[in-house]
Image (cartoon, rainbow, N blue to C red; front, side, top):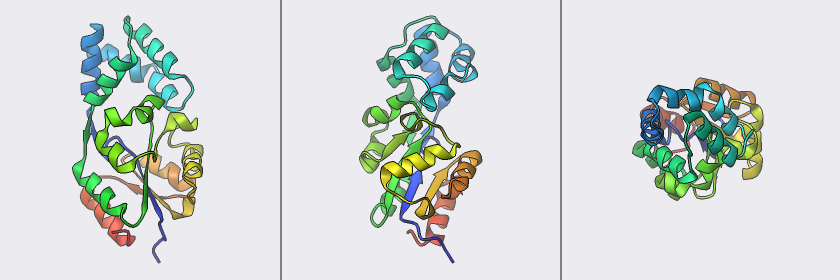
Length: 204
């Protein structure tokens, strides 16, 4: 017996969009004059990105700390331009989400700082157009995937039930976290396998 799904909750990076981390790093490298390896360390190796994703620091503190690590000022505009450079829409998956939206609710839950959801129209207009206000950054929910709290807080905002929600993410650990929180899960490996799963669940 297949599950009755009323909401499909998508990850953004590497699902709805292709994510080119090197493009983001190279932009900040050129801006700061630091080597790409130094930029990568400042964002991910230092734990700064994880803290921002979990909502542990404000956007202002995030940008200041990044600037301190890179030895230059990083403005909000600088960050947004570098982040936009890393994003390109996955048109095949967006087409599936568009078809789903005819009969079912769709939304986005992404591990990102608040600036991503606050400026989604600039960063990712294709996703903004389809999902509207139903785009949630983990930071705005005070926890990051795969913590159970982030899924449940997102569903509370959406007024949705975990048992009637399918969560789609490219990382197995995030899907496992969703399943532990009571959602259904699908590990994204490509549009073809996602389409097959959606059809198996009678969503398309």
